[in-house]
Amino acid sequence: MVTDLDIRVLDDAHFRAASALFRGTLHYAPPTDEAWETVRTTYHAGQALGAFAEGELVGTVQAFPSALTVPGGAVVRMSAVSRVGVRADWTRRGVLTAMQRAQLRAMRDAGDVAATLRASESVIYGRFGYGVATRYREIRVKRVETRVRVPIAGRVRLVDGETALPLCRGLFDRLTPGRAGSIARWTGWWTSNVQRALKEDNLKFAVASGPDGDDGYAIYKVTPGSWETGNEKPTVLAVQDLWAATPRAWADLWAFLLGVDLVGEVLAEGRPLDEPVEWLVTDRRAVRTVDESDETWLRLLDVEAALAARTYRAGEPVVIGVRDRFLPENDGAYRITAQGASRTSDEPDFVVDVDVLAAAYLGDVTFGALAMTGRFEEASGDAVARADALFAAAQTPWCGTFF
Ligand SMILES: CC(C)(COP(=O)(O)OP(=O)(O)OC[C@H]1O[C@@H](n2cnc3c(N)ncnc32)[C@H](O)[C@@H]1OP(=O)(O)O)[C@@H](O)C(=O)NCCC(=O)NCCS
Picture: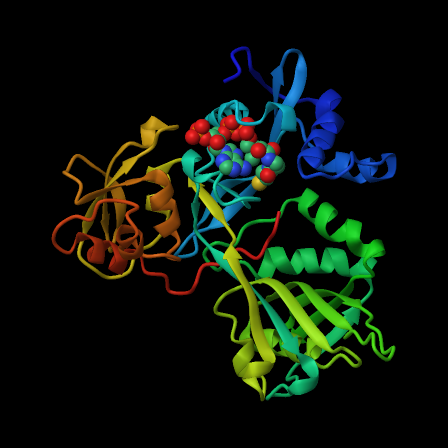
């Protein structure tokens, strides 16, 4: 363990070094002067922490201000944690642990109900109280083998990038989120993920509209293939972002994407597990799930507020005990009923660590499955079944925003 570690809020003077350090931990070169002009706009005072040892920056973490939609549709204040890295010559000496401790405390004290992140490796964040709360899938559609069952019912139009960016951003904010697990996107997200790729990747923007105006969009990129004999490669259309406010807009956007000429394969990463593309086409086997992975790692920072913010399904009450090594004010028992949740002095029916509660919070996994795998000790009687009835998801939770 490092004894004289100093965790500080970084200011302007350290942002570029923090960016270089983080990129280095992922084995990328430091940002070039040109890249830094864009990246610097995504660093803000107070949002990044640095770990200093022997007078040098050896680790960094960042948090972007966001919000999380919880079951029932309420939106809670959330920090999106990213750019986590410890310099290779300082790893496994407690630097991340010290930064996590400081960051969890700072986020909770600032009023965040939750934090979320994407994990580079699945063994890192459970110990800090993060649990996998949503998953996504990657699909590959062999376009030449299939047709869409229904024609485009509304209108899908291509919009030029400079105009499309504010249009899509507005549509995302106004129409699309609402599903448990979705999050608010901050300005830097659009800068890093869309604006920067606009020129380099020749991104295309398709906007759907119906009787009430624009109601969905898709951002995609086409990589031309090769027809050279012996070296044939399909042209691939990669869907990067697709949101629709109505089933019609959703079907129209997919029908459009699957109808683009000369494309051999349509690839879509990070899509919800329950998106019914298979049912939209004539040959369902043309649609393959090629990957399924953990998406949202959720940390409940204020357990009482988080449990009170979501709604519950019909069922008998249950009392759940919670243990939190990093934020002990979350320790305690919570009574969950169909009408809501609050702290209680009642004996808990069963006790879970805060990462287990986070995993079950949006309804992606049941307490029953978690108990079955030894993640907590199952109570006698039907307490776990009661908890599962109350926490059951009306719709599979999904985030859809990678950061
Ligand atoms: C992941 C990373 C930030 C961990 O930093 P660190 O300072 O080594 O972490 P700590 O020393 O505080 O480790 C805390 C615990 O987690 C374990 N741990 C941390 N990272 C781990 C990893 N990648 N694999 C396995 N165990 C890991 C440690 O062994 C330690 O366990 P212990 O408490 O039982 O001893 C660092 O390895 C890193 O920068 N990796 C490359 C970049 C990256 O993946 N960043 C994360 C992006 S989401």
